[in-house]
Length: 198
Ligand code: SF4
Image (tube, rainbow, N blue to C red; front, top):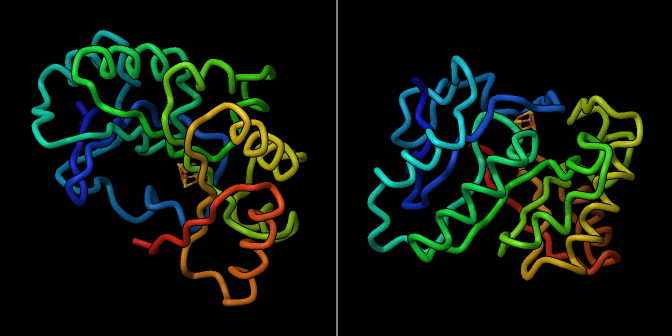
């Protein structure tokens, strides 16, 4: 069975699902089977809520303030298990909750999921990936034709309902693209984080 919780750079992550509605060119899944102390993050079958809770109970949260939903798939594709296990971890272990997402959850579920996330999520990091629709579609290869617009609308809505919202791009973008991404993020009132490509 694949690792459900794993530690990387002193942070603890939940690998909830291998489902994803994108096929990003830079996705780490195409390069390594695992990250940090995880041997493999490929599930044979996605874990049940009970299995996620058991993995949370088995983890030593000493010194950890945050639990991050980010694995070999898009966490909001397993929305119910995300919300329920995050509530469980928060209540039982007092950790804050961060979700790293592609921001396509409203399109994937064909409904507004932000109010559900806002009940339990403290920080949401949304992959902006590129400053224009053309570049975004090329690098992210999402299932939805209106993914870029949907992701921006999702981010704006998160900004109204969730405590901390960030956009992320990877540092392989050109200086011009990073600057353009920053302007786009600023226009939506969202902070931009430039993260290293691993
Ligand atoms: S959204 Fe995340 S998991 Fe999905 S393909 Fe892109 S980088 Fe990989």
